[in-house]
Length: 248
Image (cartoon, rainbow, N blue to C red; front, side, top):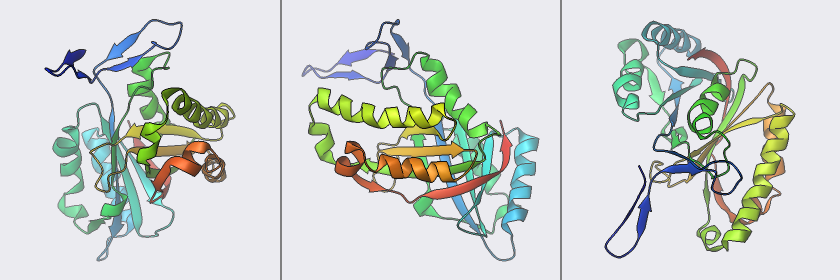
């Protein structure tokens, strides 16, 4: 953990860090949570409800942390959300669970695959909670059965904005999110996916709520921000799901 300087003076630091911008102590972690969403169509006689029942049974028996969504826009579809602080988990535990013979007629919709990692912004009062526990709690909260997941990519021009102006733009976005969360209207999971996304997206956003309308409303409200209106190149596709099963 920590930083290391290359021969040409470039400092490489992969540590998650918070507190440098506030009155609290500086916190450092070399740990973060990875989350993956896989979306499927069910074919050849396998119903979505049948697939959900089989996968739920397997997850319970193997104690696999998971959220299974019914795909609101596809009667024969489902979404599978899994997570771990060890990305090997998706190969050693998630892959075997999704490739059993009983689920062989689930077809992966590659355009909806999302994989990302939690990250620090520097303002988190409890870094471990933000990076590890908060996303899990949000996904597993039984009071928030509705979810919308989508990737996005900023334009390169955003990285050239002066740091002070960039911070102002990001704070505008963050304050809207906090306002919706404070009223229990929408709660977010924010993941970075640089180098992890087939379409070169940079972030994955998961929004959860007690009903669907507030999620749509916060996305609409965010469209008016400087970040979205001027510096977002691509958003979506949007996966809209309703929780059918949770295990964690």
